Length: 196
Image (cartoon, rainbow, N blue to C red):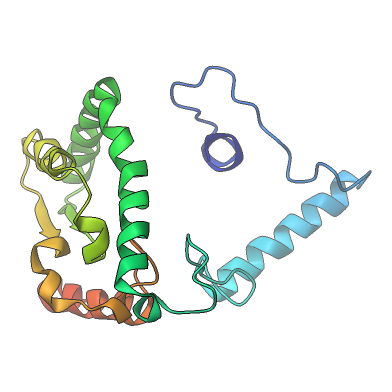
């Protein structure tokens, strides 16, 4: 993601000194630069028209091959196996203590930036499926609170995983991504809490 997204867009590779960046035009032969620029402008215009990252051009998809089924149609046993696999990927991140401390400083700086511009920060943790929550390390959840507590300023914090009874399998697309129905439910709750 650093070489294909963050570095090309933000020109920041964080701790990666020499990111290998692959041009999106690689493998397409010789295309004159004016035509490349024109195509990029059309693509940007199309994204702006859709107003969303996902559309019929780039539909939302699940991380797993659900064989044409929705998350709620997948058996509980299969969902548990997928939840365990996905949580294991994320739990591995917890070992990087230096990154955690660095991110804590970045968050503090960002919160100060928001307050200097009279913007009230709101941190929202959208819900994860019950099957994912069974396997995520408690230390990961505690780490989020530690990050927020490190900030001197007041931060509104909403963790939908504290209210999982509000959600059902139909609200998820996979282990840790909301379906359209679930996203609308979360959005409506946030509007009720904070206004439009």
